[in-house]
Length: 203
Image (cartoon, rainbow, N blue to C red; front, side, top):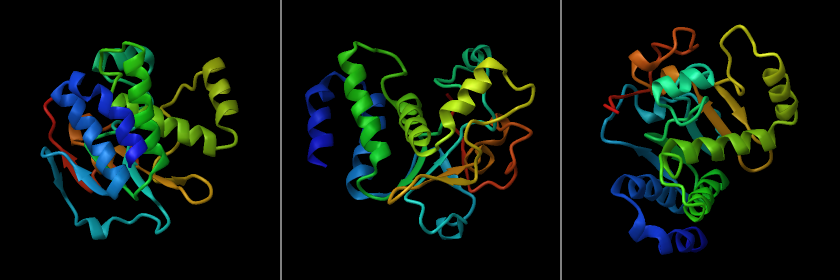
């Protein structure tokens, strides 16, 4: 953990309590592994009943069931058009995705970023998306197609309820309907109503 911790230590005193809370969960999971859930999260099923592949080293869930347009993203005040929830995470120790999220926090601090992009769902989503792109051979080609000819139907760049990654590290993407409160979940989300947990965040 020393390198990850040492990169954050010089900026710790300048971070807000909310930013520290975001970073603390990444640091602990990176060092120890395990499960993290905010106090506003309640389990609908025992963790032992989660049906995920045995070789998944990380669980992370979409915060909404399809990709937003940029206009929609701004309207709902999301940090990213395809955002991952940071109120529930599960990981094995030494997770390269969490390490990258911590690196991004340190980089953005140096860039003088003082917004929600510094920590939280923004940093986590960027680190997850970077991992997904690197581990999915045709990811860039698909994104090129999407930007040139935007689909007329709802979609996700990386479908949920799938395992991504190569070699030792693999990430399982939980559908939004499994990790989110019902009012925030898209009607076309494949797992709506099959919640593993519910978040009751107010903002």
